[in-house]
Image 1 (cartoon, each protein chain N blue to C red):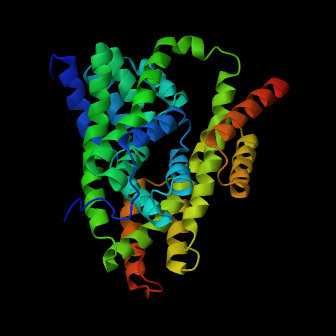
Image 2 (image 1 turned 45 degrees about the vertical axis):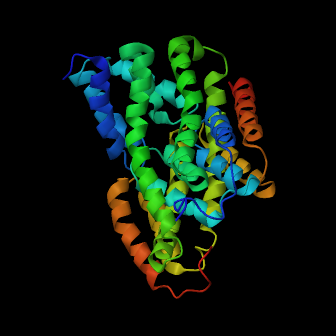
Length: 179
Length: 193
């Protein structure tokens, strides 16, 4: 453990960047352990609050590390925590993408691409279903999701801002009506 | 080999345009519809990538550690402008949310007391799911014609989405099987160029 909070943030967060397989959800538990139990930066309740904030703001949910850094060491902490989380995984992704694109056209490249594609599609749909399950709005959430999907099939270039704004308005209106 | 890592057929894109695009998407990336939004802008609107290139990158982004959306930004940036493109796309994607998330943390307690705030957030999240479904369907194209691919898709969805098995063992089992099946599949058309 280091006395310098910035170095502490790097030591805790940078390794998590490379174990975040399948997205950010893999880092929440180990990060909580380090931030709360090991370094005592924040309490467990505060950690949940950071989680909620990251969820309702734009950007990846993993940006809770940004606010954690902010709480620990202000703007410098926020910057260091953000870079520590995204630089290692991005560097790896960059190297792999370079190699990947260089071999485009070979048989094994096509096989990997065609083999991974259905798995990617399955993961996308699974991810959507999981979000709908944790939404507390029940059937309404499913209706809205399918309506948005149908709208996009009908008008593929419909601007996402229109959809997002529409979704927010419909939910606020219905909550106000139903209570 | 000049600029060997950048696709030869990729249109020339300025770094500023790249930054602007990712900054804009990043600012409004509530609820996880990012991949769908990237697809719209990069494939449908701007034509920087083909469908195949995009979904190929999506699979990589899933398999590699890190957040899908930042990995996608790195992949797209690399595709159009190499290393500088990756850095710019990543910076663009994160710079807006960076300040917003800090501002939200400062005023959080007042934010949740705003009438309609949580309802609006729910509405945004469900619409984002609709965007995800749509792009999931788009990436399924071509899969339905091959039963091993269809099987891989259904197995992934059921194990991860319904049974909620841990992602890593599922991927490590299904990915090699699906890739092997694709390797053995007789080629039907010239490789995409």
